[in-house]
Image 1 (cartoon, rainbow, N blue to C red):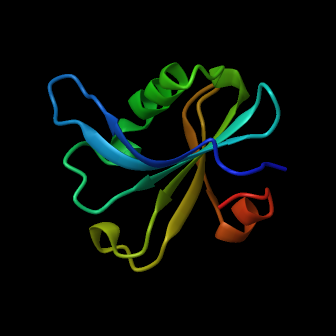
Image 2 (tube, rainbow, N blue to C red; image 1 turned 135 degrees about the vertical axis):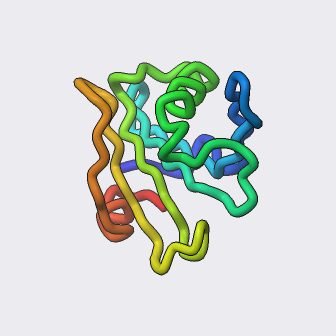
Length: 115
């Protein structure tokens, strides 16, 4: 489905009144107008967790990379060992019509040609 990532590296997301957040971003183009975003929590992140900052992280990425929010598939990843996770966690995040998380597997993400 997707090709090589457009962006694969750390991003620094500003939060008003809080420390900035540091996250690992993988951004893939599905076609010319649709994208997949995978954001991973990183050890030592001084700012809000992915889950706590999800809406601002989403808005920041859409603004920074000029993405239409309606055409973005978004995943959050919590790797093994971050905040004492016993296993890695993968969730698809829906922003419309309201914020919702759905547990997925790494295999489901890989089946999209990602990761």
